Image (cartoon, rainbow, N blue to C red; front, side):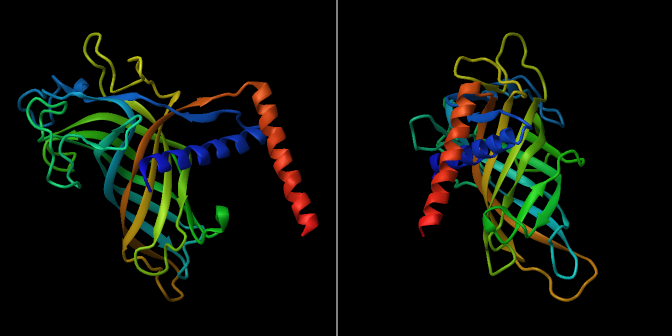
Length: 317
């Protein structure tokens, strides 16, 4: 699926979810995807990697961003009881390597630094926006927890819901050589997962390599303040810092199980199985907007008309 299609699909799902929550009286906010934002890696210039060495220098900014692209791998430990994951807990850890970004009104990815999971044909050399091709950026996450279920939206055979506040750690890291945050790395930002966060796996435990989709909503905190009047890590089209909240950080990804991709067999009282998952997708920014009362009334009327039309079709069938 293309980046634009992923973005629009995510926006539609998020808006629909927020609207339903609003109609239930819990919230009226609808997330709106931001356009033309900036990802300013230059804030790391003058900082130092863990372990010392020379100051970081030569990093530029990704401007007029539609979305960031990423790819990576995670390890999921799923608990089973009598061969079933329904209602059971899981824990996930891994990394997402940010490989490139796409500008607004464009479909051409632009490489970011030196992606570990991309091809070796990185065209960014001396004098480019990202002049130090030895650096790369990735999202490191450990201890994400949640619940698996077989009672899922849209009739999917399997789904998951992340449970925030369970000791999880999510960090955006600038690294010099690998995805080991303990060696020559700099934490750019930390994140907190908030609802709604989860996904569906139509055939997660059936056959080789089944696909799923996962959407994660996060709040971001910068790891350090830029010196002087410099802008922050994320800014809008006018150069204003995008604080979180109200800015939401959204991960929308495809998840491909690579091993073992099957539920355990046998009437076991309890068993943990470790799955390896390949992930790739988009990183977007959004803000929650509360529609005017008139807009909410129109949305409610539209839903009522949709239901009325559905009932009319049913009565005629």
